Image 1 (cartoon, rainbow, N blue to C red):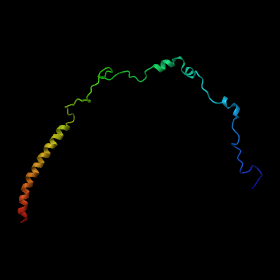
Image 2: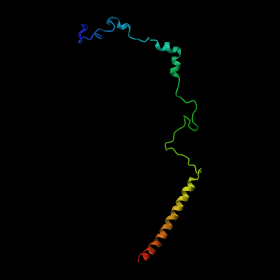
Image 3: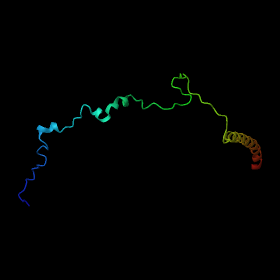
Image 4: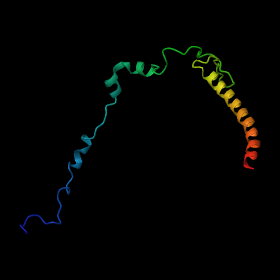
Length: 119
């Protein structure tokens, strides 16, 4: 099995540096001092001074110079019931009250009559 090549304990793939140490400083990236001017030209000052996050249009009733109220936000309540849910709930409440009255009245009558039937 021993063909006489390299010793198994020797691993020489990474025993030498990839580049010589004397010229490594020439290969490190150093950006130029005028990199911004090279990329953007003379428009860099104009780009920096532009307000990019200012909205074009404002909201109605929300002027930027208007004073804010110290109190909480108040909403206007609409009285219009589009789907008639208020009327439906009101009728359900009324029918529930009537049903309770009927069961209470009939329960009192049934209680007295049921005791007679048991005897």
